[in-house]
Length: 505
Ligand code: BES
Ligand code: MN
Ligand code: ZN
Image (cartoon, rainbow, N blue to C red; front, side, top):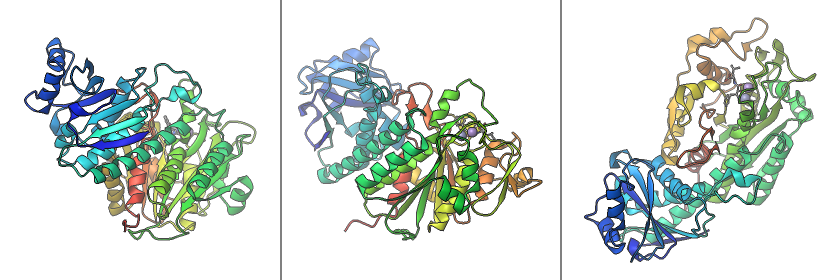
């Protein structure tokens, strides 16, 4: 896709479609009025007809008359006061979704209305819109099939129509980064959407190898022998239950233990359960097919380190992705099994379906051994988080408030929503094990908090846990995204790592 930034008037920009964001009520007394006049009053006519509405994500397509673009596409953003970074990304994506099945090879987006609503920051809007447009081209149906007539157009040119006074070089740079960010989201999604018969832990590791070679990252993949030898008892307790052997995927940019510009060595750790049947504590059949998505955290960290390598090569960053299949069988762990974690704690497996925390705990210990000073894990960890927060807000836990604030701040820059939940110390007693040190589940009350408390047992440095079980995939399409993997938290992890990138010379 070619990218072009122009300060020409929106009506002078040649493209198949001109995207017109409508913020609040359409104001026909400014440039929107000029677009409408040149389009022979089409927009006002649509408004009068009731088709151009102000409700967020409603859209309309109009003939363009004397405007140079072939068609006008309005996409409503709702009230100006509610426009934030997340919404700007989604407006870009929603525009592409509205064009699904249409012949639009070049798309121009008029940035002014969004820039004004976002506090007059056209550079930020350029980056967010570029990312949103790229994310909007993603269609999971094209993963297995070539001919999908309903897919959004694979556009070959994006033109960003900037305010006259804008700094074109700065906007272009931001938009180029936005494109790379969006490609990373889509990489996360295309890995996560793949089915379990297609992407085993071994295949996920091969994908990681391919990306590492492509982007010059160091990579090491541990198989069952090495993991057992090191003492990763929790990781192996889950991994040994499947014929598809487990893989501990470790990727790095920069040097081992090297501190970044913020004085940290960040590790991003992602849950990679390629299929979660529940194991011996088997899940009910209803919606079990969704459990192919249980590897999304791993896909996210693998894609995020690749994105960081593209945007700021050499930035110190470690990615650890424990990949397993959680299956019932003669080699599976049983409820009541005691296993020794890599950090030496004895863990009492009460429920084999609480497997994510087992593999993550050992991955966290391993990340610290490899020199990480700050940890963030991302995992489809609990059904409880989606009951609490739904599919639009990721749950966050953290041991160190300054570090938690740093992660949540990256989330704001990325335009992704988080809600911090408490690690309630008193509940720890409900996870005491009779035989060992800790149980992997502790009753259904507060089970979301307890999932965080369990993971905390394996962090000795500042650590944040992001539970994306609700946000990792949509069960139904949204105006800005198809059903399936969303790529949630990829952008946050990239923003977080980039905070430690060496300042540009
Ligand atoms: N992978 C699931 C969590 C999940 C549920 C993700 C629904 C996405 C949608 C996780 O491994 C799991 O099974 N969690 C259990 C924990 C329980 C056994 C304490 C859960 O949430 O029920
Ligand atoms: Mn499970
Ligand atoms: Zn799981």
